Structures are given as structure tokens and as C-alpha cells.
Image (cartoon, rainbow, N blue to C red):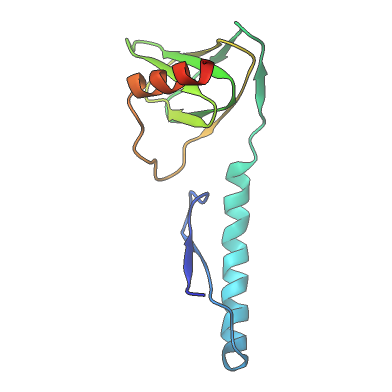
Length: 141
């Protein structure tokens, strides 16, 4: 197996998964493992978010929302931010990074589970709100 990047969940430095070691490079492999485990601790801390369960047609307020990531694990949620004319619809499995520093409001169309936490260091390109709405419409069907 070749060395493989393992940065999917890590917001800090990039960790690597090493190829299996042979007897000749056993000591260097152990040293690499110690480094990888030290980086893994930082990675795990960012993933431990408490899920927030929202009843159908209920609201959750997020104060000082700028830079936070909202993920929808189940259901469909509508998000609006203070001083932002856009509406964001999240279906299960989708997330968005809030870009306004004020209040954000999450409305659950049906029973939903969301998580709110710090955004990853590198944010993948987000789909426009219209694309998220189309996915949500399909999820309702």
C-alpha cells in the first residue's frame, strides 16, 4: 500500500497513513506512528460535536454565527442569517459555513438533527443555496 493522505477530518496539520513497514525500517515506522497519533488527538477533538434534535417546525438560534459550520444529519433545515437576504436549505448530509457575524436562525421543516461547530480549516466549495434547495425538495419526495 502506498502512503495515503488522511486529511478528511483534520483541521490542523495534515496527517499521513504510512505504508506497512518492513523489518529494516521498523524504528522509523514507530517514530512515524508516534507523530501520527499526536496529530490524531487534535483531529478527534474537532469531530466531537453534540447533535441538536429539532422537532418539526421548531427554531434554533445561533448567536455570533460567523465562521461556524451547520451540518444537517437528518431531516431538512432552513437557515437564515442576520443582514443576509439569502435563504439556505440543508437536506440530510449537507452542511454550510455561516459567513455573517450576527444571529443565525435554523428552522426545522420536519424533525431534524443538526450539529453546530467550528468550520474546518479548509472549507470545500459550497453549493449555492438554490442547489441545496433542489436537493431538499428531492429529499421531501
